[in-house]
Image (tube, rainbow, N blue to C red; front, top):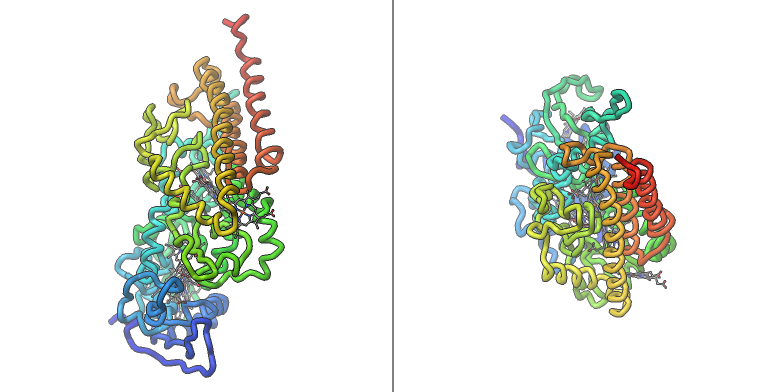
Length: 502
Ligand code: HEC
Ligand code: HEC
Ligand code: HEC
Ligand code: HEC
Ligand code: HEC
Ligand code: HEC
Ligand code: HEC
Ligand code: HEC
């Protein structure tokens, strides 16, 4: 018979341990978890130390759920009775919902699974998990792998280069390359391909599942219970520390490249400067987070995720794992700026030309798939509530008006670049969508997408999150964009002479 973690409780008494929640004793540890600890404290002292330092080891779900007001961390209305009175230990996570996980294996008589999924966390953190499903991040694997145009963009960057005569073409990349590049951030699709017996020093031969696509902690990973995402993208195991999630370095892992330069822009901004100088005196662990007490300038989390209160404890904005409910615009241009998509599943979008893009090549919106002006207003207000904790309303509206003009002006430049590209395709100097070919893989096409993917994005991010500065001009912004368009024109002129041509 399988053992379960209902088996019983081993009460570990401790004297004088006062946690920050005012709980006097360390909580009981379930029998199952104490068995895990017996081996794993030796096998993985790093994991066990992290877990011991985490909130999960310091308070039971039952005690946590009794916390009143905004400081409550367990959002589910109730937690199964058998989980309520012991610490959240190894067994409480790795034994959850065993029938749902393809990687469940018999481990010393317990049905253990390796990959603890957002649906497992949802047992106690229901609200965060449900909100995260509305965040584009949870769909990041699918949004890339399930969109034919984005797949072609991917292949033109990571595919195997193949030469025939004077032409280069790209073939599908191997799975390790994919997992190591695009899907490192977007998340892989996990699959159990069998089992393997390993001879362990501690316990002799043991059988484990072999999981393809793992390890990976991409934000839209497809898990072995069918769920999407990985909470550990931001909540590193096994501390699951809120302080880690609130630091900008956590987001930097994925939001740093010239196509998505949120971190470098932030680091160079006034907000980033103040953070790097004063952060040692800030409090990154209190919940809720008090503006004007715990910190003096925002991090990524402050503007995009956090629950914020004023020094009287009154709510300024609610926490959101959906995040896009504070974002009216999608400034990551595909290829132009556009109102945010209605659904986090962007594979359903079709523009007027039937392409799976939120804008058409002339700049028109695929409006049916995007949020309307009312929703945009609401989301703007939500983001501006954050600013209002530290800035005057005239500062905030001034910033916002400038930002919206800058994204329009940048899109106008891209219209010029894309107009050039369309003419180049029309004249047969490159082969794009009309010919049923990859529109991203030739040298001139790469020059074209550099303009929107790197330079225009850099200008938009700089305007949104710093109010201007070098990343919008010489460090990969307007200077490079204007140069990029000039080079496209030059390339075209050298090959197409309307006066002498034909
Ligand atoms: C008898 C000792 C022992 C006990 C008891 C034990 N484990 Fe393990 N566990 C191991 C060893 C040994 C490994 C392999 C470590 C390695 O290869 O690095 C392992 C590996 C794992 C893995 C990783 C599996 C993989 O694919 O690599 C997980 C997850 C795990 N254990 C969870 C648990 C949980 C949860 C419990 C308690 C319910 C538990 N273990 C109890 C010894 C034990
Ligand atoms: C709050 C839930 C939670 C608790 C408690 C928990 N784990 Fe995990 N564990 C996870 C998550 C999440 C992952 C990462 C899976 C992923 O995303 O790939 C993980 C991964 C692991 C892995 C594989 C990762 C690696 O680096 O090898 C092992 C082994 C493991 N846990 C053992 C343990 C042990 C032992 C304990 C108890 C001390 C424990 N876990 C407690 C959620 C938990
Ligand atoms: C069985 C219930 C349970 C499960 C399952 C669970 N948690 Fe928790 N979680 C808790 C409790 C209890 C706390 C501590 C609450 C407190 O301090 O008041 C907590 C706290 C947290 C915190 C806040 C930590 C801090 O430093 O303030 C994070 C983040 C978190 N959990 C993430 C996760 C993630 C991610 C998973 C899934 C991998 C998960 N939890 C699974 C019960 C659970
Ligand atoms: C370092 C992390 C990282 C890597 C690696 C990465 N991306 Fe992304 N990707 C992002 C981020 C972050 C965003 C969202 C940016 C935003 O919304 O501002 C994104 C968004 C996208 C989108 C928009 C999808 C949609 O519909 O919402 C596409 C397409 C895309 N990436 C393609 C790729 C391709 C192709 C590769 C590999 C050549 C790749 N990405 C590699 C982080 C990454
Ligand atoms: C492991 C990589 C990774 C990490 C870490 C990460 N992101 Fe992302 N993020 C992505 C990818 C990939 C996308 C785009 C997915 C797509 O377009 O399909 C994205 C999209 C977003 C979006 C757009 C969401 C939407 O629904 O429109 C926001 C906002 C965002 N990230 C903020 C953050 C913040 C804030 C942090 C840190 C607290 C962070 N991200 C950490 C990879 C990551
Ligand atoms: C893109 C980064 C990111 C991802 C992915 C993410 N979170 Fe969070 N999470 C955060 C940030 C940032 C905070 C801090 C919010 C605040 O300051 O109020 C947070 C806070 C939390 C808290 C603490 C709540 C409290 O009151 O202390 C819990 C619980 C939590 N997240 C659970 C989850 C779960 C479950 C998942 C997966 C479904 C998840 N998170 C995925 C960034 C993320
Ligand atoms: C001062 C507040 C603030 C800070 C700090 C901040 N952001 Fe932003 N962020 C914004 C605003 C405002 C926008 C643009 C709003 C919009 O697109 O509608 C934005 C846009 C974004 C987007 C584009 C979303 C999309 O759908 O295209 C991503 C991704 C993002 N931020 C991530 C980050 C990351 C990562 C950090 C930290 C390195 C960060 N932000 C710091 C305010 C902030
Ligand atoms: C926690 C407080 C805090 C929050 C929240 C905050 N800011 Fe700031 N911000 C500051 C401080 C402090 C400065 C530096 C003022 C100075 O230079 O003297 C600053 C500077 C700026 C600057 C730099 C201007 C320049 O010329 O250097 C811009 C732009 C800005 N904030 C916009 C915003 C926007 C937009 C939001 C909301 C999306 C926001 N801030 C949210 C505290 C905050």
